[in-house]
Length: 416
Length: 72
Image (cartoon, rainbow over all chains, first blue to last red; front, side):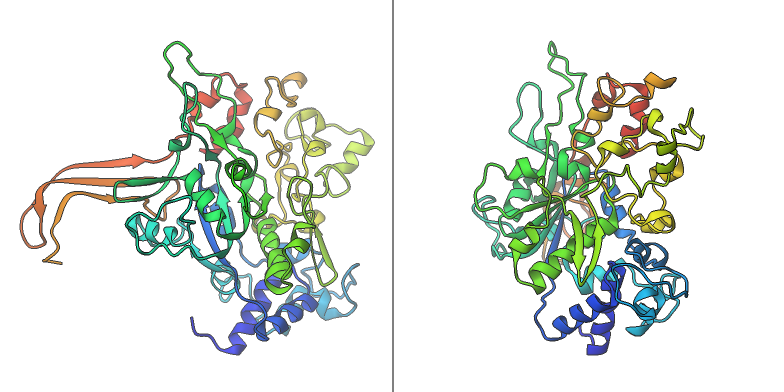
């Protein structure tokens, strides 16, 4: 796409702002991009056993100064309150000031010329394939996908288009069924992600073949990270008839476990994935790898199980997967401290006795506080704020670990 | 296109812009060339993914269904 330099700077700045970067970081990124240091990372989305929720959630990203910028402490109002961690001055403290300073109209986020997901997909990232939003179908889609596959894992066959080129980021949504199946599991044939003529490509083969050529893999959502719903215990297996087989769901990690030379897998769990947490992870990849040129810097920011602890650039830090939801950011934490418990759903008070998994769940849902939040399109709303106890959807072991049968869920122990 | 007759089966898999994995398979008797009459004798729509929600739900507590079936 041919764009002018001014448009380029506008896109970069506005998209970076939508990702929660301060104006200082925007200028830094813009400057480096204009110098030609930064090349848009090629991104490929691949779906395993999905419900479509993660992709839908990602595509909902819309610049909303009330929440996205609020999440990093930039207030939405035209006030000039200083914010800890940001440079002094009104321009840095006000979302609209930041955006108008880089040439965007003040009404962005309210329709009209808002920064939307297409700006990020096309101008910040270079998204080659995203099936749920793209137009290629059938052989066209598969042919394009095979161009990025490693031919040692998926043989090229008669497809001359297989080039084996490397690319930036592989985004996997959904769990990946593994193996060849046995008496209890179906195995990798439980998910066919693409076909070429009569040849079917399973999610397992595609994830491995694409990952081999990728700079990094982002396991997006709880299914790709930990197995999630498809990996829930199947208690219905009929040993006598051999019916009702388990689907064999595995994770991206376990898919790549048998290979050498695979890139790091970054997990962005929660069900569905939090769009801002995802794009902040991608933004961190851009800052560290595409701009900074150091994959080890990026990897050093991950927790022991490969989740991004916090987004950090140009003095702005957004905590992501380092802290539990339970704590000072939870809107009901004061009720917890004072021992005010919700006796039934709909009550005010702490939801701990209603089965809330906030203390066990490390996710950025509550980041942004009472006026903001990373769930941007809902003005900072999330489960606990709505009166629903946390179900632990961002944790390894969800849903069985939090089940009412044999799990941590206490609904049944407290009158439900 | 008139010089490009379609014979046997036509497969479109995956189908984009929908949630989930869908494949469409058409099979022909003889051949079909644009501008002439032809016969499509079978069409199959395939769901290319299995998760088994019914099997997952059995044995779980009823309140679990609230969370699990949201993700169909």
